[in-house]
Image (cartoon, rainbow, N blue to C red):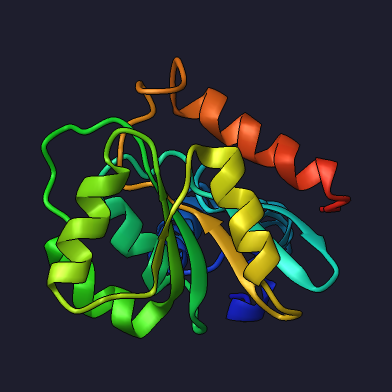
Length: 188
């Protein structure tokens, strides 16, 4: 129907979603070119692995909707390369030690913030992942990641936590992240 390169969204889960959309479109008897055009034009949903811009060869992704470790795991599996990960927020009682093997494979460096920041750091360090830096808040984590980033890197906000410690909701947190990207000249 369409090559996977036509999809602008990263991750196997987005490929599965595209296949489901293709099946639905075929049931509705849409023409193949209409389906391809729709797939090429779909940029995703705000705050769900949303491409937030690029600045000096560094790409930024907003996954503020990732309010639990499982969602962050899905986001990390979406990238072939290691990322600079921003994680933390309101503590809903989640455990983060199970993410250690994935962090070792997919995270270049972890920046933690918010009420759960220290808990995340303690759990992942206890599991052997030591590339982690505390931050005061999202803006501080963003700046620390930007200071470490090199051309070709990805900075990913995928917090694995709710936002209620510092934001009214995940949308507000995601908009703040995108504002930070825009402040540094990031362009979509």
